[in-house]
Structures are given as structure tokens and as C-alpha cells.
Image 1 (cartoon, one colour):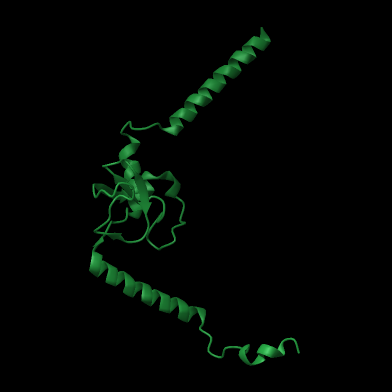
Image 2: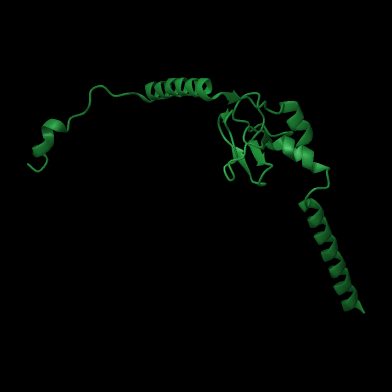
Amino acid sequence: MFSEWDASENGIIETQVTHDDFVSNWERERSTYRDRMNQRYGSVELPHISEDIVRDNFPYWVNNDTGMYEGVVAPYHANRAVWVCHNCGTYGWKQGDIRELFKCYCCRSRNVTICRSGELSMAIRNSGLGVNMAAVFDQRRLRQREARRARRAARTT
């Protein structure tokens, strides 16, 4: 008797939408939306770094085939779209489409460069900019070895 009060409205729905139908509808709607936005606001195509360049310049990706899309190694790593504002110095990464109207999220300037993070890495790598943490670690390791030698020499004398 407790569950009888809504029995007429609590039946199983006969027409269930399957997951595949839902996904195909979503993909179609997303494609239509993207086409409409590209037509309205324009789109900037930022080419991916080729698989050969990624494998030649980044040792991690030499034997690692974890790319989610065929033919694109490191889609969200070396091929991540990064933007740098030359007006305020802010940077960030961009996911999805890049519109012709893109501007800095901080100062709203259009003086922004968009590139791939792998390109940024290759440009900075041998420029002398910044602090290379591998060099810092090597200096630390050398300091610790010298300290151990000194302690060892102090114990033996």
C-alpha cells in the first residue's frame, strides 16, 4: 500500500535512448555549434608539432605511444596550445578552438602569441633563459658528494 500512491506514474519508460544514440546526437550538435561559431567568430588553426619532431626533441616520447589520437604523439603535452601575453606577461594554456577574437584573460590585450608548449620548450632550451633544474640538481648532487667526502675524511683522521 505504501508504494501504490504513485504506481501509475512510476512505470518503466518504454522508449529509452541508448548511449550510442546520445553520443551521436551530442557529436552532431557539437559539430553544428562549432561550425556556427567558426563562421561567426572565425577560427585560428594552430598546427600540431609533427610526431617526428616530438620524438627527436623530447626523450620521453621516443618509446612512449600514449597518444590518445592516432598519428599525434603527446596531444596534451608537447602539443598543448599555450598563450603568452606580451602586454602583462601572463600565460596560460588553451583547450579547444582558438577564435580570431582571442585576447589575454588578464589585461584583455590582443598582443598575445599562441604556440605549442613543445615549441616553447625548444625555443627556451638553449637560450640561457631561466633556471634549468637539471643543472641545479647536478650541483646539489656534487655538493652532497663533497660533504660526504669531507665527513669520511674527518672520521678517518
